[in-house]
Length: 320
Image 1 (cartoon, rainbow, N blue to C red):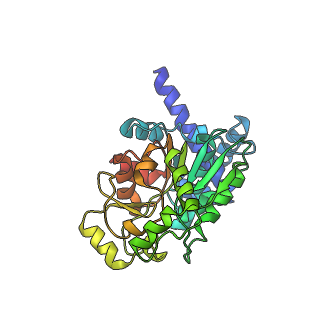
Image 2 (cartoon, rainbow, N blue to C red):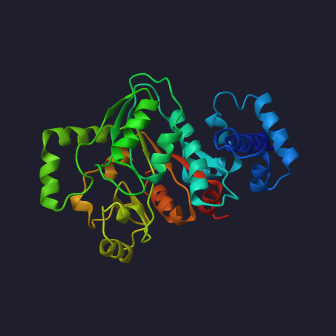
Image 3 (cartoon, one colour):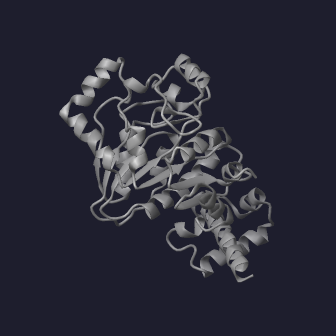
């Protein structure tokens, strides 16, 4: 009975933390929060008071509270994770709202996962960009951040080095950017560029990461991989026919989370999946129903030790 009471308290704390994020971080009104989570406005008022009284809200919401909910525990048990963070986005009207909330929780997760002296790899994309903007200032020592995928510009997200630089600044660390395009026009040119001493040294750092912070892409026609010009629609269709379920750092992954030798694989300048898998702590941050299969693939491929997702995705992963 005592254990059940403890679990219920952790669930309550996680819900309070998510309400605090919506109110103090995202700027929603108490009425808007009440409508989103399906309670009365006076209940929200009381929840915010509980947050203050119990120290859940100080300068920032404690990330350890967000990783203590029932869904978080079930994710850890089901997939053998070290930790899982679940953002409550039920009732959100748009992907932008969901992304903002998940990014805030993901930014806290980054602060929990990273330690002083770590070598941290940072990927690119809409989710990682949102995380970089939500990062609080941390007081780590001797942290080094490395860009995990070469430079690319899209109409959705600024250059990939921007994400790495912002997160490095928030972690009080140094940043090594990857001075190369994410994708080259030919495999031969990509091979030659990987041999250049500066690029080779940067790629070698990615073989010894303490922490990797990344997201996953879907395999639908509007995927960022195509929007950014890393792959074209014909290559995507071929990948789908071959069984691709997601995209990790520009590389297609199968249902089992294994890399697939498909274009633009041989033209990429990015971390190898095997080197990502070797990182000691691997934080995957994702939101949206269209990415559930991609997250499942990453979990199956041993590419994740720490997970940050929305509540709907958590339930889908658990088969609820």
